[in-house]
Length: 451
Ligand code: ADP
Ligand code: MG
Image (cartoon, rainbow, N blue to C red):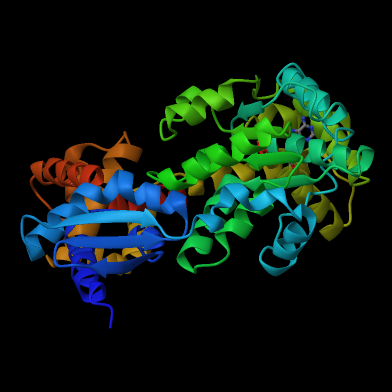
């Protein structure tokens, strides 16, 4: 039997319980205890980047725990077992067949392009003309135009529409080029899954590196402390870039404001052309509405068009949902669309927005859901650790997201007389956020849930 195995298991268990690392298994499950000679513990992995990552980030911790268990003069060596499997060599030979194989075996769930998202259906306005021109530039001269193109702007302003329009155009005009669209979130999930289930990681890399036009949407969704994902994106980026492929990225803000990203990734994203999309003005909103109405064979009187565009100033999805609702109502009541109908729909949408706004109840609901604790309990008196933590998280979130509430009001809500309870909770949560990345991730997910 391998004598190194129990030694390694001991240490691994210590690391797991005593060191606050996230996604530990993802890396360590790929590591094997190779040998132990009473002094040197040799760990091996077949993927040199996993090995390097562990070496760079966990060496000290591993050494510390090994010495704790086996004595001060013991040490750890981490090395790559089989360089042949290094992904860097992957795409050189039999490129196509490897790709096709991986595509059918591992990634049948590619995100399809929405065929409706075309340049034809994208209404140009002062808020988006640069982004549109840049996207058309990429679509018409793929691999020759500015590279990368980074598109940014708030929710529902047309980033995904433009990216997919690029994809659709290229597919039609240059059928020999491979278009690959992915969200940053899916990229991250694919990666984590491949690593944790010991799936074909080299295959995954080959798959993502096989694109001629690589469209990566919503880059801001990369999770906190997801260094490995960022590293992977970085290498994918470099690989594609150096091979003359085109990369388009979207984010909800300019790269330099994506505080979670590493500097080297930010500087890559800034190295080409950046174009922003702003909120459309009234004129553009009216044009978008008119075009969507036409798509649905819907006749909208000008008064209705103007009224909706004036009232619904948020993102464009809300204009679309107003249209759908109008269509529905007019069908239901079997009468043509008129201003009063539009008014009642705007009222409904406004109510919905109001309801969707964050309240202390929605916070408790979201926190309860995340912690698996009933709302009543969160609001109640129980002081068990989990319930207290959930309650503190609620107080913290209330402070952060409902500025209108005073400390005393928050305290009263949870049946506490003393407002310093809230300050105490806030402090505690902030400390936890800094020191426990799993918890930070959980809170982040709750906030996403709230929004
Ligand atoms: P984002 O990705 O920026 O959140 P989307 O691309 O999903 O936004 O756009 C939201 C909706 O608004 C989509 O249905 C899209 O077709 C529509 N839309 C956005 N901008 C325009 C535009 N300029 N012309 C027509 N439709 C648009
Ligand atoms: Mg989008």
